[in-house]
Amino acid sequence: MRHVLENSRLNDSSLPERPNHVHLMGICGTGMGSLAAMFHQVGCTVTGSDMGVYPPMSDFLKQLGIKVSEKYAPENLIPTPDLVVVGNVIRRTNPEAEALERSGIPYASMPEALNGYFIRDKSRIVVTGTHGKTTVSAMLAWILYKENLDPGFMIGGLVGGFEANYRLGQGRHFVLEGDEYDTAYFDKRPKFLHYIPDVAIVTSCEFDHADIYDSLDQIQDQFRAFVRLVPAGGRIIACAEHASVKEVISGFNGNTATYGLDPGMEWCACDIDVTPLGMKTTILRHGRQAAAGTIPLFGVHNISNAVAAIAAAERVGVEPQSAMDALESFQGVRRRQEVVGEAAGILVIDDFAHHPTEVRETCRGVRSRFPDSRITAVFEPRTNTSRRAFFQELYVSAFHDADLIVLREPRDPEKFPEGDRFSSRRLASDLNRLGKTAYAFEGTDDIVRFLTRELRSGDIVLIMSNGSFDNIALRLLDAFKERSS
Image (cartoon, rainbow, N blue to C red):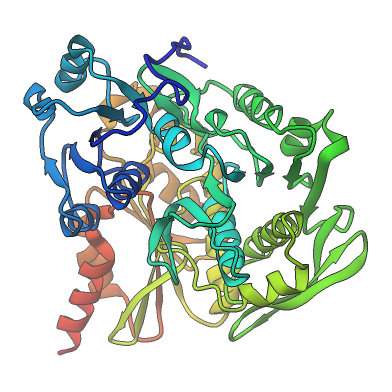
C-alpha cells in the first residue's frame, strides 16, 4: 500500500463509555449515515457535517432530526461533542479535522465506533470480496431474519424488505459487509481488519482501488491478514474456484469451506435454470443435495452469492433448505439490477456495477432475464480505478451481452496523468471494431437526448455507475413519458 500505517488516537477499547453527543464528519456516506442512525436509535444526540449533501441520505437524516452542516468548519464542533467519528472521505488538511486535532476531543474511525458501541458482544459474520459482498450480506441477513434470529447488520446498500442498510437486532448475530478500502486519514488499514469475524466470507479478490493499492498482490496481502483474524473455532467460507481467492486461503484448510459453481467445491450449485421468477437451482454439499429452490434474482453470479449465504447460514445453525426457502422471498438490494420503472414500453434498470467483472456479469444477468429484448448498456466510469487506463482493455469484453453501448466520458480527467486516463471514446471505437454499436458522450445531458431519440418500446436500458450518474434513470423515464404524451 502507498500509505504508511498510523495509529488513531482512540480505538474501540478506549472510547468514551456513554457518549451523549456524537458528531460524524462525512455523515452522508452510506456507512456513516447508517452509523449516525444507529447512535440516534440508542438515544444519542447526533450531529454531522458533509459537502454536497443530496438525497436520499440527506432526506433520511432529516427525517431522523439529525442536524447536518453542509460545510466542514471548526464551528461544527461547538457545542463540544463527547465523540467525533471521522469518515474516510476526510483528509488531514480538512479545516474541521485540523480543528479536531487541536481540540483534544476524543475521535475514532467508523469501524472503531461500530466495534466499540454496537458489535463488541455479537457473533460477527463478515462478508468481504471485490464483488458480490453487498448481495451476499443482504441475503444472509434476510435468511437470519426469516429464521427469527433477529440479526443486526450493516450493509452497503438498501436491503429490500428492511428498506434500510442497517439494523440493530437483539439476536446474537451481526452481519457486516467488510470493505477493503482504507479506514481513515489516521488509519490506512482496510476497514475489514477492524472486525474479528466468527465467520468470514471471501467472495472474490481482484485488482481495484488504484488510488490505494498498486497491485493485486497488495490486495491479496490484506485479505490474507483478514482471514488470519478468524479464530480457531471460526469458519472461512471462500469462493476458491477463483485462483486469487485460493491463494488467499492457502494454509487455512482446517477451518475453511469452499463454494462456487465448480463441482469441485464443498458447496456448489447445479441444474441452474432461468424461470420468469428467477434462477432455479439445486445446492450440493460434498456432492449431495442440501437444498433446492428458486432465487428471485438473475445471473449465475447471484447463484454463487446464494450458495455463500446458505453455507454461512448453515454454520450458524440454519438448515440449508430453510435458508433456500427464506431466499425465495428475498427482495434484493437497491441498485442491484433494480427496475426503476417503465415508460413508453421502455424498461429502465439501475445497477451499481463499475468494475469490468461486475459490468460483464450484470449485462449477462439482464440478458438471461430478457433474452429477446434489445439491451442498451449505459455506463459511467466513476471510480478512481475505472477513470484510469488500467481497465481500458478489460472493458471491451465486458459488454458482450449488450446490443447498444452508451458511454459517458470520465469526470475530472485532469486529476490523472494524461497517459493514465481511461477513454470512453477509445472503448467505443474498440467495441465498434468488434461489430458492436457503441457511442461515447461528454456529458449526461447528451446521453439523455440521444436515448430519448433512439430507444423504442420493448427496449431495456441498463444503467451502470457507482455514483448518482446525475439522476439519469429518472430523467430518462420522464423523457420517455414526455415523448409518448
